[in-house]
Image (cartoon, rainbow, N blue to C red; front, side):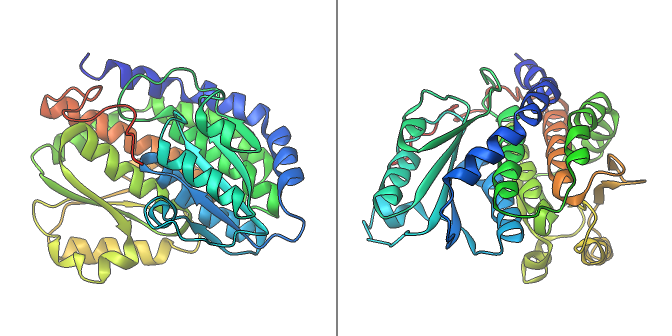
Length: 339
């Protein structure tokens, strides 16, 4: 299909997000009613692209709730069978298909150990949906390309609704209402990603870095590049890149710096300069005159969505440039049945 499925599903994202934004207040009310009155914390259960969305959830939920937020290590429960007290915790399980046995099992066990559970899924009749007390359906329609696109950005908006239910969030409702239009503008502007793909077409390694609320976009963008092209792209915090991996940067190893504004910006600019000093080709995804421009005026907490779409564009463009079919990467399937 030469990436046509992926391109089609990417183009559907503004409509998918618009539907979620329309139902946003209902989702907020439902989560607020489910969450324990004396909230101990929020835990996220996911794998793959959903796990990257969960990283965003961890940041925004802890900021909003003032309570600890964490990513569950599923093996603690599926392989080691550890009895962990989750009384007072809200568990958020994410899976596009809802069919991964591991996520369903962990969600059920955490409920048995005292948690209240909400599932964010694209299949509302899935095993995972039946394991939770509340379901936030993504309503994204069938996703046929192996690389997840529209379901990931929908998960990010659903997680923003969870955070909003728990306390004050770092964006305004008007910002959320403009988000589908901002995503449509990014999708309509594919030329920057194509130009960067031309520059980086021969690279076999790359880094994608961010910090804070946009770390999820860096992790997901790196995964999309790996899935669609086979290039060994690694997503990480800019702080972690400084702690050793910076030694792997240099000529022939591009670095994409994702900057959504806010507190991390100064550190990200310094990191970009450091990588450039080592001879690495450096590009930025940010508002203003960046190689991958992000829409002006979008707050950091929602720029994670537009930056994730830019990462999808870059991955798809790199796949085309390298002669790879992005729809069906070799050796991968749509559902990975970990247990």
